[in-house]
Each structure stands twice: as structure tokens, then as C-alpha cells.
View 1 (cartoon, rainbow, N blue to C red):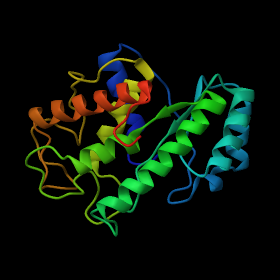
View 2 (view 1 turned 90 degrees about the horizontal axis):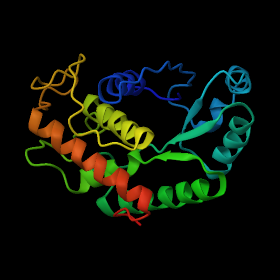
View 3 (view 1 turned 90 degrees about the vertical axis):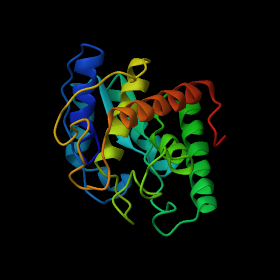
View 4 (view 1 turned 30 degrees about the horizontal axis):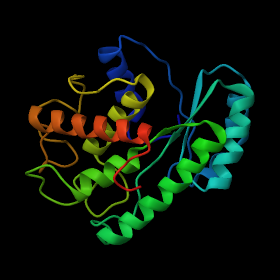
Length: 225
């Protein structure tokens, strides 16, 4: 998995609790670098080994994603693309319109890749847009899924990503897949953002919204298409 922020840990826990499935993950990543920078010898060797059932890449330029898929097809049974959120959102140098335009461009590229290669898309960027433009009640700021005025997700955003992975990979709703795994202790304040609290009500709301977007993606009918 190419990711940062702990998505793989929470995905593994969600699968164990909700789908009674255990997985092993490994990460090879250049922090803060584009997808093109991931094309390193050790990544190529890992893909070519045939040791993995799936290889997850982060989204990037369409031509770069195509190259990765071609290599992954040689050694792995499944390519999964983690469609990450747009960095210029309303809380960080972006307007709602520019954020929507950028998300729509990304969606068009993902749909082309999906059609051309059969890659599995995890539409985290789409649920981020949905949750940002129509936030649950009580959120203290528009960028509550990110660190304040930042391009990186916070702990709440991380678990939203994990639930989206769960929904796409299992085809099941994440609603009710609850677990306490620090720092995500249901009912407590988030360590990085103490103004936010992962209440049982917020937990369920986010899971429901994730499941809605996951189903819409499969139908080709998301709110940004």
C-alpha cells in the first residue's frame, strides 16, 4: 500500500471486525512525493515478485497510473487505486467551486482508468467532497477531515479512508463496523484535533455517507458526475 497516516492499520482492523478477514500489508512510499516518484527499484521488485494479491497505488497523473497498472498486471492479481482528496480545498487555499472543479477532473481520469484497465478505484476524494460540501451537524470548521489549513488528512479523515476501502473491497456497508483502536476511541476527542470528538452518532453518520458514495460510484452516479 502506498499511503501515510495509518490507513492500512485501520483497514486491517475493520476487515478483521466486520468481515472476519485477516490481511497482511506492506508499505513502500516516498512521503510528500507524487506517484511518479514511487517508481523505484524496490517497488518494481515487490510488484514483480507475484507475492501479493493486490497492489495499492495513490492516484496521480493518468499516464503514470497507466504505467503502474501495466506493471502490476504482470505480477499481481489486482490493482487498487486510492483516489486521494484534492489538496486545495475550502480550508486550504481553495474555494468550493475550485475544489469541485478539481474533484471532477480527478473523477474523469479515474473513470477512464477504470474503463481502460479494470483497476479497482477507492473513491476517497469523492466522499471527502461530499462530506466537505455537506458536513454533518456540529463540525467546528469546513476542513474537519484535514489538519487545519493543511493538505493532509487528520485522524478522522484517516478512518473515513479506511471505511471507504472496506466498502469497496468487501462490497459491504461499513455501518456498524465499530472498534476502539487508539487514537480512535469512540466518544473521545481526537489527539491531533481536540476540537473534534468521534461520537457514536458521528461515527455512524460518516459510515453511512461512505457507504452511499461507494454504492453511487459502482453505479456511475456520484454527485460530482
